[in-house]
Every structure is written in structure tokens, then in C-alpha cells.
Image 1 (cartoon, rainbow, N blue to C red):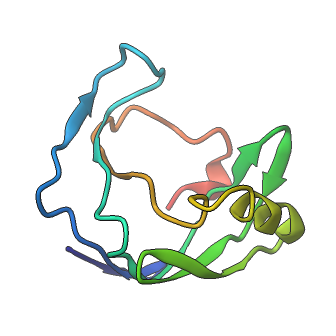
Image 2: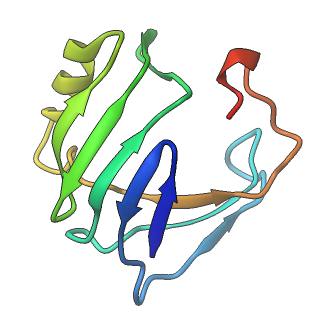
Length: 116
């Protein structure tokens, strides 16, 4: 599968994978179908227009480049060092763990400036 747009040029394989429906039973707000991509299949780049928030820290302007499924380059406008430390947290942290398609159009970002 290939994804192309102003913030993404990425290919990955979902061959043989099963999609699950996330329907509000374990995570709210919710509304997506998701699966795990083939571990070594991601190739290309993705730029995130919405911040990542983890452990109370905001990381903005993230861009990741993948080769053979692994993040080989990572940058961020804000808190890049924290992003890199999270990617080095364990041997699997640089690999995609999930591919999802959002289906709940009622979910609104917390900050309107991040609408894509």
C-alpha cells in the first residue's frame, strides 16, 4: 500500500494482516480500524501536523524517514532530543507498530491549528 500527499510519501505492506475495529470499548474518543504492518516493509517518510504528547512533553513538527521498516532519520521542531530518546528506548521503538484509518468524523483536535 502506498500513501502520497503533502505530508507523506510512504509505502508499507499489510499483506496477511487482519484489521480490527476500535469502536469505543477501550479507548475514547475512538473510531478507527487498525492492524500491524509487516515489520520490515515501511519505506519513505511521513510528517506529522499534529503534536505528539507523551509524559507531559509536547513534540511538534515531527518528520520520520523509514528504510526497511525502521526509522533511520527523525527530526522535530520542538523537543527533538526527547523524540530521539524515545526512538532509542528499545530495539523495537524505531519500527511501525500500527497502521490505522480513522473513521470517526466527530473527533475534533484539541487545538484547531492542527486541523489538516
